[in-house]
Image (cartoon, rainbow, N blue to C red; front, side, top):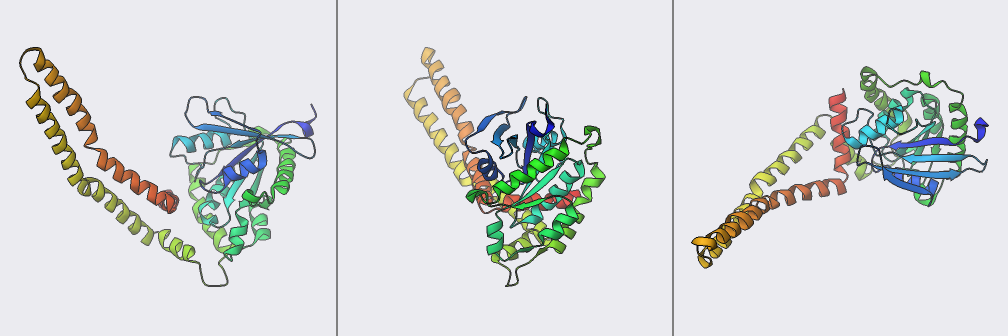
Length: 331
């Protein structure tokens, strides 16, 4: 078979909320297949592109991750797929690292980890239009030279940069066909730990703040991602969450317990506890009402914790907390 026309396997890798799935949809359109990975419940999304040169590209939208040091089933799938050790999956020929151009700080370390693997890679700076509106100045030429990978600016929701990205992927796939897979290595733990410091250096060197005063988001990030102030804020939020779960929920839990008790007393007053009726009373009071009540009593705690999680996710704090803890624990 002619190597140039061989189907190329492309893996999209990036942080959650980086626009990776939007880019996947822009690339593949309606030509998608959705299933689960073998042995896990993580969703598998694959799409196909027919390039202008006549080559078929198989594009895999991997679950979002902050690092190849996986800490969840989703991140394990991404890590194993990229390293070529996921059961039933063929290793990708090309990695497309998808980065939120407005928040490169969160993704630069992942990019360095992916680069260390040795597979051909293309960096897609997504949401580039928003970064420009915010006044961020990214030295694309310097970053290209430093990383040694092609960089394409994209706006997935408007299909900007898609054709250029496909072209760069095709070029990278041709390079991939000439590599010896035995040269592809998984990054060792010590090398991964050093990526955080390298990412900070790249951020300071090639991502310049706006010439106008910092945006509100930038000012907030400078506090939330600070190794000391950010940790204090995180611990404060966790304290408030636990306080809410164990203290604020107490009145509602007591109310449910009292209500369940009153219902049991009401049924016990109506149904006698003698003979066969005693069995019915026990079934209703101790079995049905008591059993359901023992579960319902935890409902206030569950609702409070989910309300906190949803609120923190909507405000974008969960991603920043994950990045902060990964940075602190990773060294």
